[in-house]
Length: 214
Image (cartoon, rainbow, N blue to C red):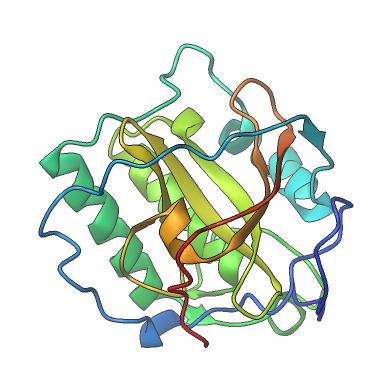
């Protein structure tokens, strides 16, 4: 899914850039299970955003992965058990996949899939994490694929989990699960919680630039 975007990611269906991530070289956890995430303000959506074309193709292939069940909760209640499960899934998937661009992997510029063969780029890591967490009973409605600009101003996909303590981010660039504000990323858009669509995050930025270069 590599398209070397060096400027702000538009809200068109353009592919994300340089998001193959770090795979087995993921940054080590720093007391990631020591306590629950700090209370934080949620990332607020504003208006519709254009979906990514490769996401639309993924949804056509796996409609259940994109279907919004309005009976599911919008947010997860973070207990110590839930926090441990989320952190464990994030780290395990990061270390189970080797980074590979879509062009190398599939022969196309942009394709979203589950990295079942052990290879993938940023969105493939996050899709697999969501599937693993859904298998543990977490509601898909609260787990949203999200497009950001990373520390290099390049397009990147993360998994945003909406919780009662704020929105947290699962990322293939690190094993630590951070609040969205702690990542230092610029937030462009994410999946909607009310329909199979995307909503804008208005390029809002995290306040603490903690993302490491990879």
